[in-house]
Amino acid sequence: MTSAQVFSAHSKVDKDLYERDFYAWTQEQSALINQGRWADLDIPNLIEGIESLGRQQRSKLRNRLSVLLAHLLKWEYQPAKRSRSWRNTIRIQRLEITDLMTDSPSLKPYLQAAISKAYAGAAIAAAEKTGLPESTFSAEVNYTAQQILDDSFFPDL
Image (cartoon, rainbow, N blue to C red; front, side):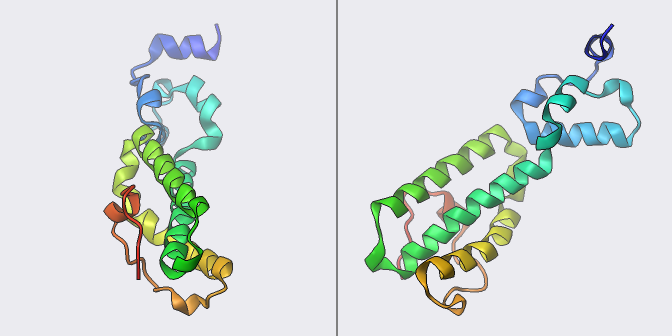
């Protein structure tokens, strides 16, 4: 009998959670390990997804936000250089973030922290790409989470 068959025969875990909310699944599996509830672990999916656990989902969110925020800053601080390419990048990042949050809705409470963490890198990237001094950009993000994700929001000075 394979480990997957043994697991299937003894499973008490919501097997659909892996497909519905990957981040919540990672947290559940971690709790089961901490409690020593080895028989309740989702072994087949642990094997398949071991390299893309919750931290990777948070990292993906921060990375997308960093690219989005850098482009919003460029849009705001270099209006003469605005382009369809910048607009496209902003829109694509918003779509990707929305998809990520839909796939892992338990990331939503982390959104504000992710924005704060992503902003520092975004300001550095914006300074590098615009040639403006880093001091040009606020030390903290000046956009709300709602604005950042709103497809109709494009900042102006």
